[in-house]
Structures are given as C-alpha cells and as structure tokens.
Length: 97
Image (cartoon, rainbow, N blue to C red):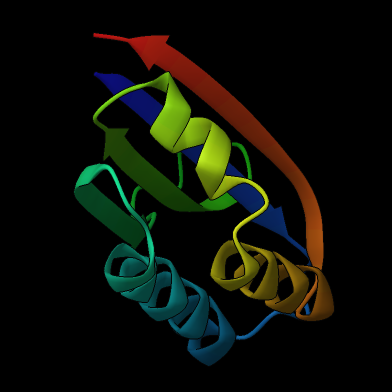
C-alpha cells in the first residue's frame, strides 16, 4: 500500500469557506478514483503547521493506483480550484507501507 500525503499552504486572502471547499473536494475524490483504500482531509487547527493549512492523506492499494490519480480529471479539477483560491506552496510525500 501507498500513503500519499499533501500539505497545502494558502495566501492570507483565502477564506475559511474556501479552505473548507478544498477539503470537501478532496474527500469527494474517493468516488472518482480506483484503488483508494481511504481518504482523509482537513484544516489545521493547531497553528503549528508553518502556514500549511490543509492536509490530504490518501491510502492507495498500490503504486499503479497512485500513478493513475495524478492525471485523473477529477483530481486535476481540484488542483485547479486550489490554485484559483490562492495556493502558495505544497509538500507531497509518498511512502510505501
């Protein structure tokens, strides 16, 4: 299995409502992807995240499922929305578990 973890940093003008929309769109991806074991997403509340405000964690069955995720049109639509609402940076980590 593969854990795919993404932390996203947004500009100060990004609203709480827009952050929640990002989380909702992340969670909705599960019904459009194959090979997904679990999907979690949320907004940081700790204030310790160095400005990275949204986290996505996806557990895939295998590397092939992860590779199919990147070009998936539903994933690409979420990525476009994230850019639209002020994404400044992101960190992506993929580990085999």
